Length: 290
Image 1: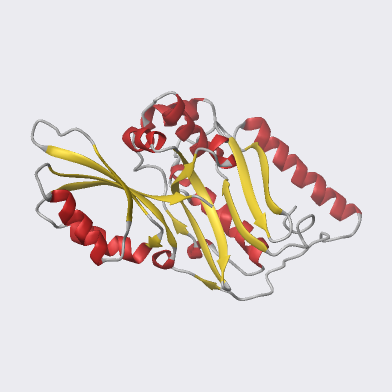
Image 2: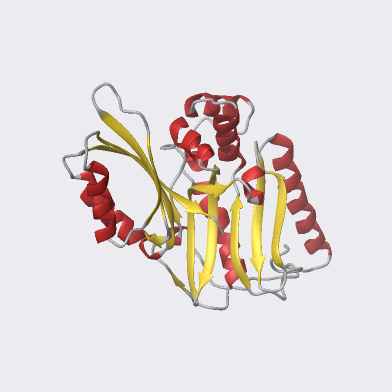
């Protein structure tokens, strides 16, 4: 594995990737061919990319298991599945993908692991990522892992991540490795490297940007009221788009924030959700630009 071998001289700063081919295929069909989530999932099942029960994939659990392993290797500390914040793609809509594209982003299910001052953040969730980022152009059933090290800088590993033959190829490779170990009376050249004990950050403590879509009453002063709540909670707005009102005078707002602590935006949302001017919260999606 490159993290243990060719990148062994590096202090790894972050590992971020598309590590589930099924969800990447679904999101590609939704963004490139304007399919609905249900249509894209059905197509994925027909092609053998998704199981009859797709919960492990679309719920983010498969990606979470993979990023837990990658984080354990990268940061030399044991990361378990329960340490990973997990959010799947089932709440994504065509409107979110459309607005993301208008704003210059792609939507991907990302596994993200970073170290910051000796503490680790490990999470899986849909994210807006700049259309210029290498991961934004990883489509269909392909996977990619983007690694940043202090010596190597940025590097990425890319390949197909779902389907009968790619899966068979991985299994066969593991069997060959096992056979070689048996023949050489070896248990493997590289053992566990989890020799440190680092704190895992709560999702509420992470800092990132956010995309927010909400429906509000369309009348003067509403935007100022919402901006005021954000300001009271330390949330700074980078951009605000207002879409056309519906016949019943409900406006759709799309907001991108500056980087802020998750706890602060969740506190602001709790207040906004209960305001009389708010009809509903459409979605909250994290924005990754690293």
